[in-house]
Length: 195
Image (cartoon, rainbow, N blue to C red; front, side, top):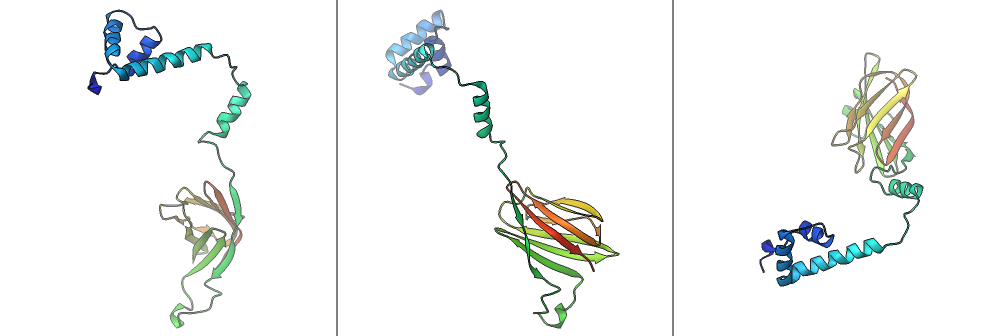
């Protein structure tokens, strides 16, 4: 039999719950008597309804239900791991592996490592202010935020789709830098910004 001529599920549900009346029921039941597919669906619906009406189980306590719903909720926040980054490269201390042209540049590069992520920083000093930019080298950091704070001020910037950031200029001084991502927070507790 053509599937387009089957009785719609909502009508079969109404028949199973005795909510349908009149000529529509008669025509539907005539079809059900000739169609094994619709007959099977109607019997399954009637069986489920009988089981639901005879169910004697009790509801779980409300506080247990709330706890379970919160535990499995997609909005539930997972604990954030906090990592301290360690300096692994400083262009001012590394010497000049590329000859005389690389001895002194206008910017300084720092590379910090923290388990599965690296923080690449570029620092330029202009008029007693530091311009700090960089990139987080890690999978899944597009939703991150970089914050820097110290006695001389604070600033923040979001990571772009390449996990790069650029902070607004801040005064020379000592700062702490944090990279906040949904699952991990990387901290550089002491970042000296100087000429």
